[in-house]
Amino acid sequence: MWIQEVSPGGGAVSTGASGRFRGEISKDGSTITYTLSYSGLEGTVAQAHIYFAQRNVAGPIVVFLCRTTQSVTAPTCPQAGTVTGTLTAANLTIMAAGQGISEAGSTAADDATIKRAAQLAAEAAQPSEDLRGSVEYKRDLVRVLTARALRKALERAGAGR
Image 1 (cartoon, rainbow, N blue to C red):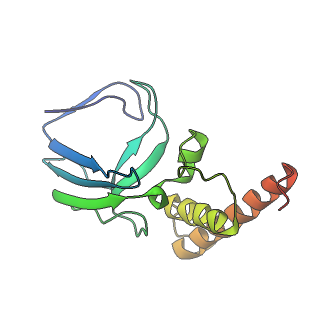
Image 2: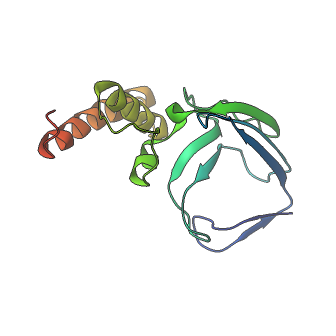
Image 3: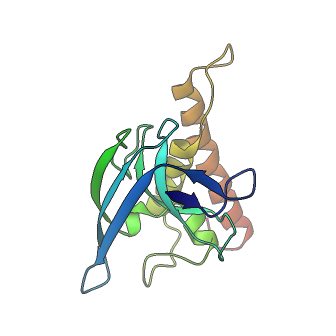
């Protein structure tokens, strides 16, 4: 039986699902190679992730292990089975920075970092298609506006952007 510590609605969730995660940190600490296996989930699999928070609190997602939406940072989740991958600093979500998690020694907010953050925000967006635009258009809009907002925030903070 699987017990999820915190559900979005609050309280524990009990299911007949089972799962196993095994991760190995490289000697230099730059990568984590992992295998995630699971089965018996009652709903549709959308993602597997690691969040960062104190016990019994749902914190922000800092890294995705797999996703069912198109992603450059995580493999595709099967409905049941095994996912393998290697995590690096490039896999960290934009929310990781807010938790003080970043690539070792990296504090620069260069253009590549801003583009990466904007891409992650676009991937995390879950817009619906309607008369105002397609899902692809809305995700691109999230990407563009996130990059603009980050550049403006850095400029206002005196980072010279």
